[in-house]
Amino acid sequence: MAKKEYVVNSVLKALDILEVLDDQSNLGVSEIARRLDMEKSTVYRLINSLKLRGYVQQDPDTHRYMNGFRLFEMGNNVVKNMGLRKQAFPFLQELSQRTKEAVNLAVRDGKNVVYIDKMESSATIKVDLVVGKRMPMYCTGLGKVLLAYLPPELVEELLQNEVFEQFTPNTHTSLVSLMSELEVIREQGFGWDNEEYVLDLVCIAAPVFGVGDEIVAALSVALPKFRYASDTAKYEEAKDHVVEVAEKLTIALKGSGY
Image (cartoon, rainbow, N blue to C red; front, side):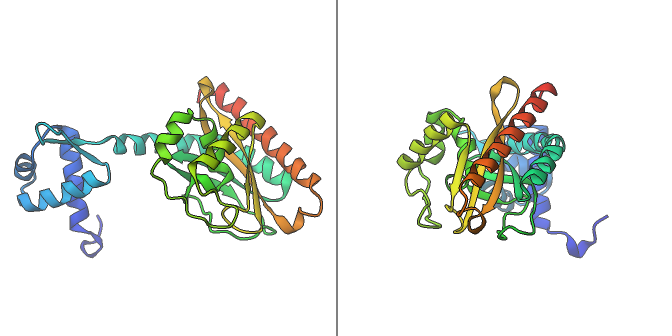
């Protein structure tokens, strides 16, 4: 049992609310407060915080509460990503061995790209892209590849209110320019991050598909520009490795019914 000093009561109370709504949805603040023996004001504050983050929804007519789809999405992603990481691991190893560079595996979560696995290279410029890192999709090769294979109308919906932060002079600054590049990515089958998040670092990414040809992930290799700029053929070679390994992972995932 957790020690008392390590427990945050407000967090436990918020989880209690989620569990009550999981047991029975469409409850009002008074009903939740009564079931949990909490003050109505406490329930109101907590449930509005949960609602703000998408974990709870409120019926606009009855004003009653129910658990939101955010919980479903999170649970789904945990199950899927655990299986995906396990299946993808030998392919990340292969890509790392082929290129001798850092390689990454990422998935889309809403309008962000999330890194779910990686293999580092001691020779690569160090960037804070640890497993679990969330990034805007418009400034990474992985993110742009994940966007490229979504319906254009969904991309526009996801990013219509996005503030395009310019991390480097090469970062996209508008949805219009991004959409134009996504068309190119779909045509060529891979995407580039041309120093769009970090100067002197180039990433090449390729899509990974599951059953039904739905994009489920993306693979990338990170290349320090100073070691590749003098021989552009090296970029082409790295691109071929990424695309080939991503295709092999796609075949494996489809074969397993993923």
